[in-house]
Image: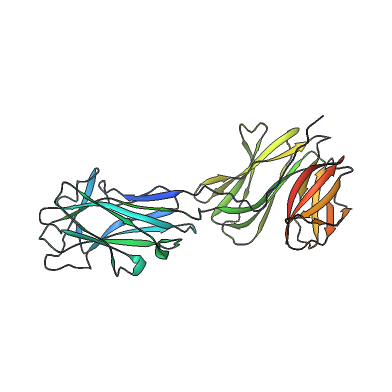
Amino acid sequence: MRPYLLIICLLGYQLSLAQDPFTVRWSFEGNPNGATSVLYITPVAASFIGVAPNSFGPYTPGASGQAVNVDNWSTSSCNRGEYVSITVQPNRGQTMTLNQLSFFFARSASGPNTVSVRSSADGFANDIFTGTATENPPYQQASIGLSGGAYTNQSGSVTFRIYGCPPQGAGTLRLDEIVISGVLPQFPLPVSLLYFRAQPQPNNRVTLNWATTWERDADRFEIQRSRSLNEFGTIGQIPARGTTETRQLYSFSDDWPDSGTTYYRLRQVDTDGIATYSTIIAAVLDDSTPTLSVLESEISGMIRVRGRNLSGALFSVVSITGQVIPITVQTEATGSIGLYGKLGTGLYVVRAEINGVVRLVQRALVR
């Protein structure tokens, strides 16, 4: 006996990347630039306000590799207008939560002997760290925990300022390995995929349909096909909508599918060239295996389905709470099947029973 294929379509899953911690690092290996461990957090190059890297030796041996050698500190007073500034900025609609700021510091023989840090979280009003700088070597390490709403789920930039005071003389403050760590609680999703379905057609074609609830900087969808799941090849592509907050519908016809089972997935590529993949779905083309797919419908009180080899099938609809909903089944002129009943807004399970056994299950969202 040929095994029946159970295809379950999950509504509301997303093309996504796993949630990850991130770090942003300013190592000062001959330049003030920052480096990020993820593409969705932008580091701003360290800036020097009222001070500057030493003109004779801007970079000096540090805690690891080189350190920046900051000069021109005031010698008469502790000047809050003099500082080294670093900034992190989430991009592409991301939010970030910052957990820790750390860095190494030291001074030359006559450099500032106290280091303090302030943050844009409170408008640079209060110190979040104060430490004593010793003449290097050795370097001291600052480790500053960051917590509270000002560092949680932030969609805007966060800036830290590092100050050197009180003055010792015309010396330098040396900074190395400034690291900001955090997490991305909402990892940036190029699209929110509502569903992805494969429907065999009577003319030995397979129609692929999918919908997104929103898109952000999305460039295109590449449709990929596989016979064995070992290797996928691209059989076509469709432009995405770019950036939109409204529901978008897509369709693609595979005119030359393999006989038997064919597997499909979407490769979504955004405008930065970053690609993510959908869940893999299957379609079966033969004269015996039943298939069932829920069709897009905006008609209240009805769920529309289509399938193959469903002769004699008995349909039922069950609410998400387990209640069986009485329905009337009507085959339409287009070949689709309408399941009519008191179907309010919500998620339902459609079941097709063949020869006394529930063979196929699909989920349907009624709006």
